[in-house]
Length: 406
Ligand code: GAL
Picture 1 (tube, rainbow, N blue to C red):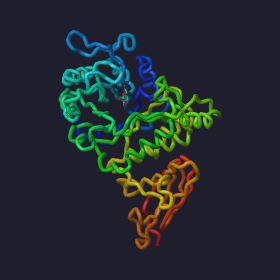
Picture 2 (cartoon, rainbow, N blue to C red):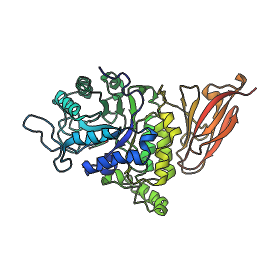
Picture 3 (cartoon, protein in one colour):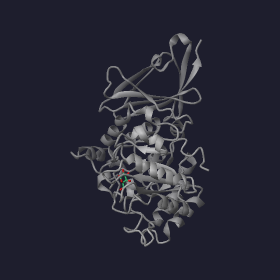
């Protein structure tokens, strides 16, 4: 029987794609699993170690079975899964709804039930399922339903991570397909423009996520600083400016071309946490800077993402600067609010959140006890409103408890 809590809250983990892409192997995955322990990631709640595309040979074997790449994974995938499990972690892998993966390896089209069984034999706990080389005349909806049925009947609990980039009106059918999370966006790049674009694209789609079927805005680029074997992810936007600007900001830390500032990474992490996206780390977790580690292991922010009710935050725009400055307000199961205040603009931005807008009237005799989740300090009790000035691309994340004030 399936574990009825599988996928209850957004999965937390690491995925090989953003930094390593096709350059993956047994040693990398094992040392990444080690880093979950030594770098405090497991302790912060991260659980899934996921291998993305390019792990298999280009051909199936004579029986139609997927074959792990002999050079990259000489001992097979099960050996890697066993190692990950020995660390008390869970293991994930990747396939595709089409005939081939985006990297040109065999996809699971017409092999769904056999592949699901293979994954179960290997000890897979999480399957990311892509959308490249999808036969034109078969709806994606049917293909995700097919793999979901296969996984639910393979004899093992496997989290099903759909990845069709928000195509084909995925919002309308993905929950009923049985997927536990679904990518709603194209691929992230390691630059501020990309972060901003992905986040904005999902504001207004709050109603589609929720328990057991989470809106996945893509994996995190926190801590990459432009370092990826995949130039598409590492690069700037089409004009090339973004990377150069970010590079100047990172020059002091010796970071490579591209990437974001630590402040932008904090904002990125806060957005993903408040928007209930899975938090799948994409940097090289074996070599994190102190700032990266601090961002990724912020337990106050992770707790917001992992709230058991998974109610997505709603957006309140700053009335006199609605293009750039807004709050995301998420009702928490303990009665408090999680509040993120964001400035997407390029100069300082004032945000003033009127409590009236979140259901707390002054006449109620209640105010908010506010705690700053990045500074880790109590800011005091506020009535009527909370105002702050946010730096460019910066944010504030608050946990606010309703208290009597008279
Ligand atoms: C893309 C997907 C990426 C990564 C890549 C692998 O379609 O969105 O996250 O999995 O394929 O080729």
